[in-house]
Image (cartoon, rainbow, N blue to C red; front, side, top):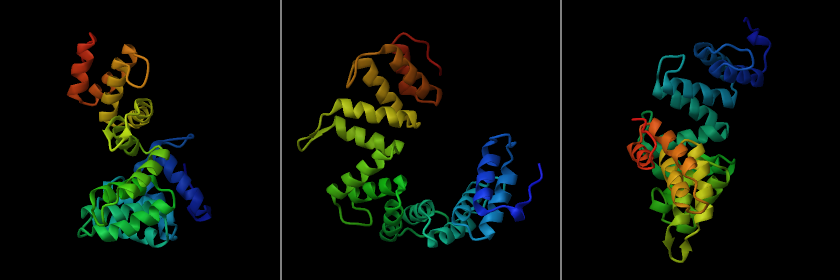
Length: 244
């Protein structure tokens, strides 16, 4: 299909890019074309496209991999205040990725700007940094607040970490198995392997819910298919055939 890119708005180009990337709404999957469309919108200065094209460069999806240039695109997008790009630059500064030197305190500023826009990944990173005193002074109350907000946004890893706190008993908090199991389910559905195994355990043992061995087996099987040996062993222990 031929497209008149010059007549398309940045929003239309971004939408087309998304469709080309996965093959949707009658548009055939073409990652190289998706990257090219993202580049066209990025060259017009669109913040979302700048961020997206940086991700194509990072992964080498449809273009030649170039981490340093990926960061340049993310920084341009972040300078325009685009939340996901702010989070990506923050992560580069936190971990020293894409040629950046580690600068945790600078990363905090980026994560805060991303979190203020509702980017759950930024909230989660802040939660971990405040909990462990990385780039900031330790502050458990602030850490818990950011983690709760990220979990409210259903970020799988945030739900998993908050679930662990619901099961743990510490300083008079925790011991909330029903809430913990509900959070584990969100994390498990989001692909967190350890959450899949733990939710299977909850189903098997009736922790925070009624016992359901069939449901337990389903979650063990899902994690085992992804290579989790603990899940595979648990599946066989229930009398079901393993998958590994």
